[in-house]
View 1 (cartoon, one colour):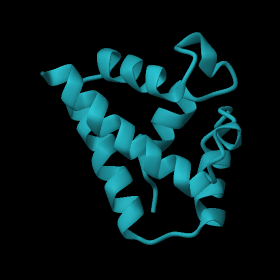
View 2 (cartoon, one colour; view 1 turned 90 degrees about the vertical axis):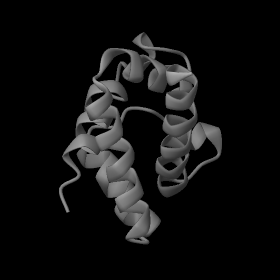
View 3 (tube, one colour; view 1 turned 120 degrees about the horizontal axis):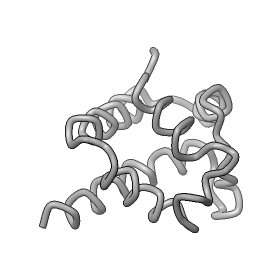
Length: 101
């Protein structure tokens, strides 16, 4: 279970200085979609779907975020690590749809 694209996304866009790309996770996702190729964006969505299909627990989700260098404090949004990853998947899909329209 490597999830290279998830790790790339978290370490590259939600690192300790994540706020330089936007003030919210949705703004950062919008920036990611504008900057990266459609293949990369779709790969990230697929990896997040695969991750959610594994029915992981919050401890494993938190471990993935920590190991990926996540600097975003998702707890401020009243979300657990797992809830935030699932929310990222949702935000990616709706933001991508908006971008492609």
